[in-house]
Image (cartoon, rainbow, N blue to C red; front, side, top):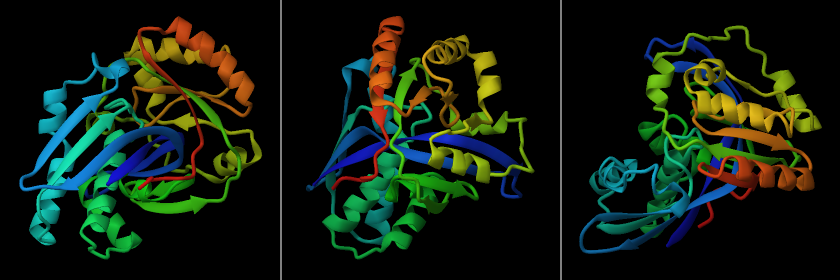
Length: 286
């Protein structure tokens, strides 16, 4: 079984308050996009995870650590214990940067949960899949859906938003990871009176309003992030950090403008991983 697992960008991301459980209450509008990892799952006599890495990312990822610490291992052993499944071999091709704010690890996790459910005919429905995903990560549930998604709570409460716009995104990954948990622990910018309505209507009308609660501090702390933001702003008024970083994106409504800008950005940041992607409504491709 082969599954393509998509990345995401955050059009807006607001941390509302710190919850009693230590997590943050968030409000974010996510768009799933056409950058994919590929997972192959097959039954086997013993469990094994192997990883291949896109050549653009080889200098940014420690393959041994990625295999040893991968959330896919925890998910398999959870299913082995609670659903009594047999061993599998998992092959993962990484095209989505790691620790980049693009949701690659969470997307991989959702794919494995959905894949094991289908491979072993477990019969879990969408709500049950999301509940399993939430045990392992707050933003895993969103990857059982696609398109434009408003995520609230810890990120696990998902509402589809009916937006018919296709946006084009230039993604620039500067080659270093930012730990999401650490970023939230250091977060001082809370927006308790946040109103999502203008952000969603703007995205629907082709005049998106971008906001990221991590962006100011991240740009101050990491000069590369600020440099990319300023470079993208020469081509579009819509440039932002995604997630807690480190990837920065520029948003375009016009495909031709996006391609022209991408040629310039690739030239200016030839040592970084650059991608041109678009809104994608297909979700997990099994």
